[in-house]
Image 1: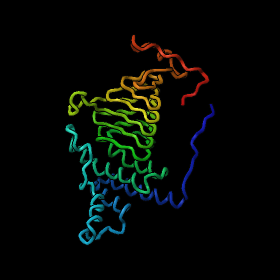
Image 2: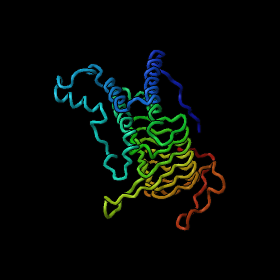
Image 3: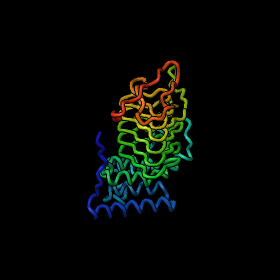
Image 4: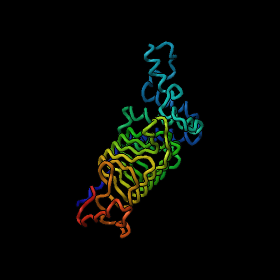
Length: 282
């Protein structure tokens, strides 16, 4: 199959310079240890309501006061704050940055593919437990706590993805997570929904989680494996295997797999057939 590398594009030189200066200011503020709550409020006010910076809120209509209050993360609550296992100290360090990330995505800036991933790349090291180089994250990606998320090098996360790190989520190098995928690290009892189990979920190097797929808590997706579109991975996925369906099962092994990838994982699941050497991985 033909290979189609991404084109290299840039906006105008003037806009690139403008973006770099703004991102540079943001990065310097974070590295200096500036107050994150105030940094969030100031940044979001500058994006959404620049004309109201410094205006006494009491002089504004009530609806405008309420809208302006949302620029300050201290005035909002986020869903993870209700979780019983939250580490409040760690979360409060990250909350203003999580809120800034979410609100940036909802602004006119958020879907700019030149600016957006660069903005998120600035915030990620201050939110995640670990993040590698060349992290590329598109808009409307959400996390739980952030502090239980480890991300390797050259990871790409596409639009509208949920990365639930309640129980811990480890993403290896060169992992690709497609649009609308959901990766979980917590699960609820079928008897009592308040009975929650947190389980570490791991995506090894080179894993692909494709469109609208779901990986359930505690699953280990092996090196260079793929979870197919709309599939639900309820158990571990062997390295180099392509698992599809609900529940996801192995249907083939990638043609570049080492011999050991064809071994049985259990007596209940037969060994997958190797993919034809001419077949491309979708």
